Image 1: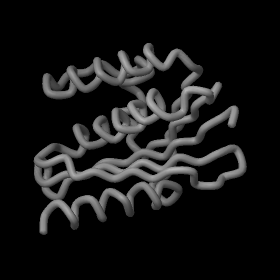
Image 2: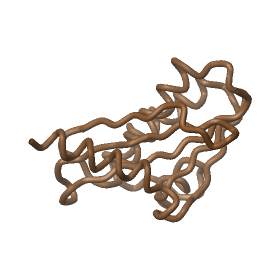
Image 3: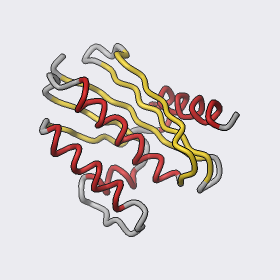
Length: 138
């Protein structure tokens, strides 16, 4: 597989509140090759979005080392613009998460692009977030 398409989402019930993340990995043909979900405890929506990105990048680093190009699709304009350097990070709780994302991207060392997509195109990752939230708050 030369190119990997990733869809990430994170969310909380309440802001902050119980939070979860979901990540979907697809190949060049659009076939889902892996799904991840995780309950992360109490967080804001933005913290959850970053945690979803961290989960995706950690998985890439461990299990997708032969992929040459990575396209990350997310529905958070704030996170996308912060990660590519267009928006400053003003929240002190986001800074460490941003640094972790940056370090993982450096360690991966591949071409990584980011696309802002409408929520309707991110429904699979969103569903995983809700599953993680339901499982984590039982």
